[in-house]
Length: 243
Length: 243
DNA sequence: AATCTACAAATTGTATACAATTTGTGCAAA
DNA sequence: TTTGCACAAATTGTATACAATTTGTAGATT
Image (tube, rainbow over all chains, first blue to last red; front, side):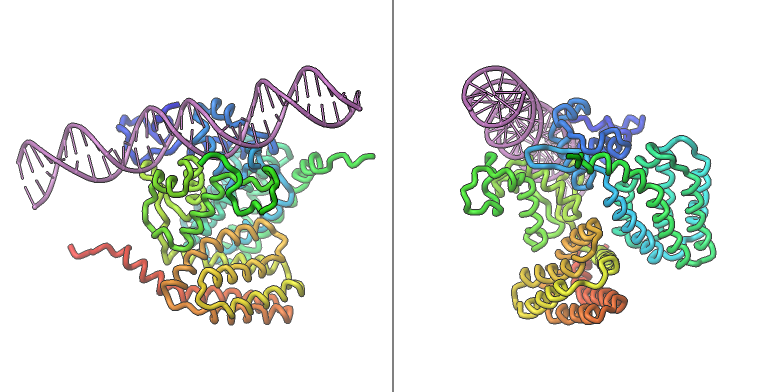
């Protein structure tokens, strides 16, 4: 492929000539695509990535591809060994436990610093949650709406850095959630109820209780998901201790 | 420069032939160098970076240099506009306020989850703090020892992801601290005292009080540093409204 | 058969070349 | 003087070429 800024979705059908505002580097698009693939288990955890083949498949040269791979490595979705190249990061029960603990703590901080959400935000929360309840059998849609609900929950926090950090953590969590929702017997109903348990104290301006509900939310999710992840863990981290 | 794995500090005087374990990609070394430069104000905030010149200066081709630049961008030390290249991120009072709030919250969480530090850790803390008190006029040394103290403080936390996040945040804070210590009238004595105020309740197994002292530490630091940063802010964000 | 070695193929790391855009400059027109 | 434009230079974004290492394999040795 040769430098053509116009194969991105962001360019509408309007025939604007190189509008210069929505120009996006190739490595950004590539990293978006690969991130999406990894999050949705289209690349198996632990599998190696062949740069040449991947570049050919994506119709891109190795330069922007490598830039994307390095970014994904730093985001924690890939691992890299010098001379050996990149591999998809493994899922681990330890990581998911640690991530859930952190994200719970940060969401609570975001709520504390943002205060009780305003009326509009509360409306959005319950609307998203309602729609989430109607979703069925579309894992990606359910997960993206769940993410949207949590994004809205912390949207009142004035600390932008914190909101950004939470957003990045959510992406890492997404991978585990997707695994759980597809491989396991996940029910969106549980999430909907847990969200209600958070919204209700918020509606009564009880921030403490809401924060406690947030903690409960993540703890419950963890309890539901861990068995699945553990199974995966065992299947690869217990390498035949026979003999 | 042509692929020579042996210009890194990590290679000792032992004549091991390409020991394969301590091979480090060029872009890693380059990002380390540039990060160090940015942290120590050797590149002015807001200034543009010329890839060709920088590559020539570092005796590296543009490929690994760009990989390093992209990493530093993601770490928040550089900004990038498509087609315009990279610039050193500005210092902002808002960012430092947000960072301090986050790092205080996370250090407290790390303490809570790690529990009261064991005896060895407590010894290390007071030793580092003592040495910190003897440092004088060596800003970089003082800051690195300060960082070491905080690293030790949270070293007992079993949540590795959290420890890593705190470490990354500390790097971002370092930049502001350096600015404050060089441009302003900083005294290490204040830090030493604040550290003692954290260690004392820890020695009495009073985690609550220690956490409160941590918050106080960061709040005090912020109060000391903000005036300096604010001055910088004004000098550039108030662009001559004289009609 | 199992292990070692030598060599070839494949793959990664880096450098260079090229394409596209941005930026600077000189000159004309108002 | 200022504004606008054309064109050249500089700079960024991407592709390709090359260097160094890793990986795979066939044959020799035990």
